Length: 238
Image (cartoon, one colour):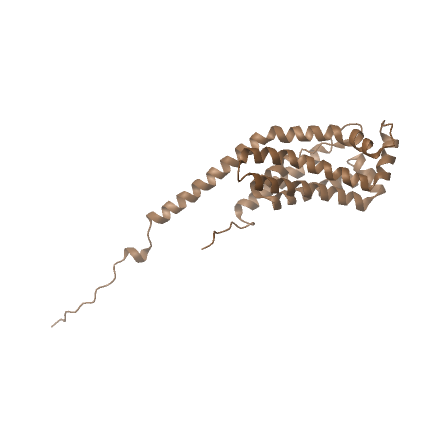
């Protein structure tokens, strides 16, 4: 008989997703008021709960949380809460949406996949790798998206950045990416031991509860086994 699978929409998973989604929304809104670097980009504190979701629940959860991240970035940018995203939105609204959603979904899904693959051998290494990969993929996809709208990025640099170069990669790396990326990477790597601890505690609690349920089931046999079958009475009353 095959191994029973846990439902994606189990009470545990829904509870985790609810809490992590709230964290993504709150942290992104909070981060949107903290501009980093000359371009005024926002620091993505949300990469930590995205990584945690990918580790505890798998790639699908990481992708969903990344989608929420992208949605908040796009909406707040279009609303004028972030000058850089607003600039991209005004010049290339469709491509701006693609960049926001693809980089968020991609980093969450990749983090979950890598953790799932490496955790079979070493969970501690898997968590550090996933924590590092999430900001790397997020930034890498952002760079690819910026290359697709290089004209818009170059115009933004001329108008708002003191980056004297016609090299689009130099503008993106030096003017837009470097400061944010290293801060986000450091945050995720610092949080990695905490993520590992949470994972271990949750796993032990779940395993402990499962063992207790099995033990109770074994110590409490069914009613049918406790009741002795009736013996037919062959005597006849006179």
